[in-house]
Length: 72
Image (cartoon, rainbow, N blue to C red; front, top):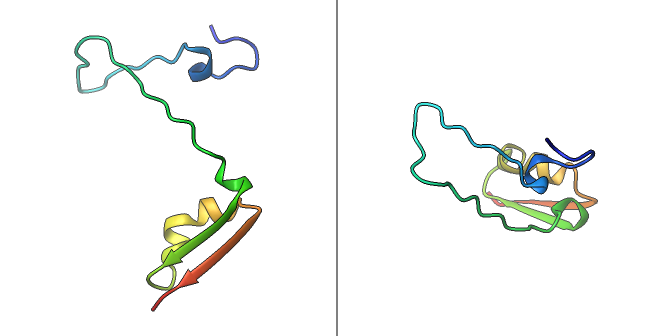
């Protein structure tokens, strides 16, 4: 089971199950740590109106500081 307060991935107990496919051998999951963009300044450069909202609203709406530049 998962330790109290631990997430399956961090606890090393994440299970993968294929659906409509088969995994040959033992699968390996590669992890890369990314900085939390919500705690950094975010600038979104969009080529058209509404592109920033469609592509990055989830990110910039949670950022402490964000700018949107729309090029038309």
